[in-house]
Image (cartoon, rainbow, N blue to C red):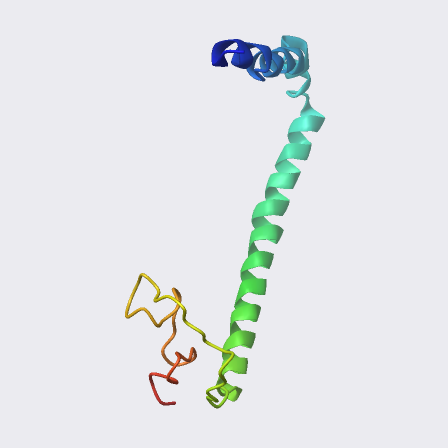
Length: 118
């Protein structure tokens, strides 16, 4: 079966077009202009802008402050050179080859230990 025959036979374009033509008839579009529909749309728009977005902003600020407070009291673990950890059979293709892709020199140990002191 050629690609052209396959794409015609199993194409979703015709099916989607038929669904769209059925869903958005002029009679159905006029139903969306009724006052109760418009009133409902405006209500949910106001709920989104005045409750949803400020709520997300406040939750983000709360989480960031909690993380920063936790970061003040935590310390990184002592480096112990276990043989089964940080095994490098091949060098990474970035950096010096010993650091992971999202390497933090203060918190992530390499095979030889931490790069920066606390």
